[in-house]
Length: 417
Image (cartoon, rainbow, N blue to C red; front, side, top):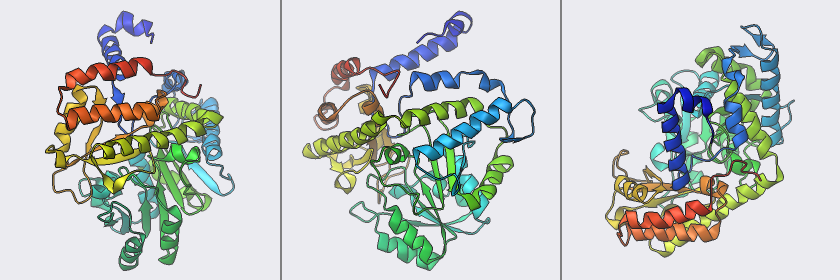
């Protein structure tokens, strides 16, 4: 990529950018929450919208000179509804959250009084930090109860209902960051209605799969939906909130002025580009291929004897317990990184180890699918993982095979082509 002004006047930053680009090109990225954006998304991030302060909402700003900014934000909100096929009469969108964490916190702030009860998935079983973990401000501000998965790795919806009936939360959260199975939004919706609770679906990980028709949609069942844009949606690092129209005023006020100042307009422009790309026919093919790839990777790893949590996957990620191999998750991730295979260490359900050195690793296929890899390449990747973690071959020798793959499947500048 060409950055002539950086190269000329900011050589150290330029070198770091070049180093990072080189790293990304040479590794197999299996981190489920990462992806590659298009050149158009990158260009939108580097536009003069960076220079504009637009505190407030379209047509109700606290700064003048926002005529174009208003058009941009209105257009992006319309696209957000369009990709999910939602009616603007029934649903409202806020595209200003800086990331997924403040988006979730804004919803809690708007809809749940401090100290009141929220029910969500336990972090150790696949939930997110902002779903009420004790180290998060969410767990310190609201009273969280948690559900998890059974020993089989699946959510037990009967147990969720039992907990909900006992705890009587004001809000139920469904959605996860490390759960490899489809989430039954309809069942969550029924549980929420039975106890007169609101339902929040956090689809940060599966939003692109929902848009692509490869995962059920939450919108017939949830009152609010939050999502990031940089995972399976293949956009910039941002977030948005979609809510039923009657809840939108409270949520908008929680985002601004409750939690944030002026929105990052350049990021909103890049989100709009990603939404436009998600409307292209090939995006559906991409979403389906993500799941095909993850299932192929899981099946091959199981064939080699890896312990895959829940026995497989329905979405873009899978969890592997590496302790039967005599390895903790941290060491397994480090060995794979030496070979150029990037995963993240992750807790598994009922983990007896600590979060900084857990029992598992988490793998996903959004980024490698963007590069054009398919089931055949997933089998090759699984073989590389086997040679490193089971056969204990020198990772530097396996690196040559990894680089042959990455050389064949380059980072595309226009992922939908």
